[in-house]
Amino acid sequence: MRRQVGGDSKYEVEFGYSRAVRVGSIVLVAATSGSDQPEPELAPDTYAQAKRAIQKIKEALESLGFGLDDVVRLRVFAKRELGLEDFKRAYREFFADIRPALSLVYVSGFPSDKTILEIEAEALKDG
Image 1: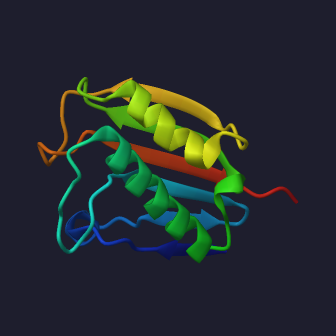
Image 2: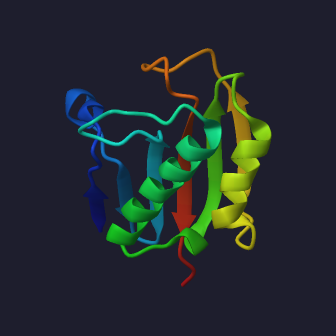
């Protein structure tokens, strides 16, 4: 059984991808920025971008019958301008008790110069 959900990014149509794809007990969520579409505005700070990206991931998961407590891995792609303390603050608001595997990878840039980070998630349901 395969289900997918779209988000609000124009790139999904241009490239032909989904925000999230569920196959059985697994959901894979594409790299997600903290922008709001159709107004692609980004907050200028790490905290707000991280918090919005995680909220978008949560919405995608919920539309496929999952929740943040099902997340087992997050990958954060970030520019060097990432405010690490601000990221940790936003991250802990959602994942302090869930404690998924986490990777932080620094990248040279994103399609939008205003993007500080993108977050990718993997979720798994037991049984």
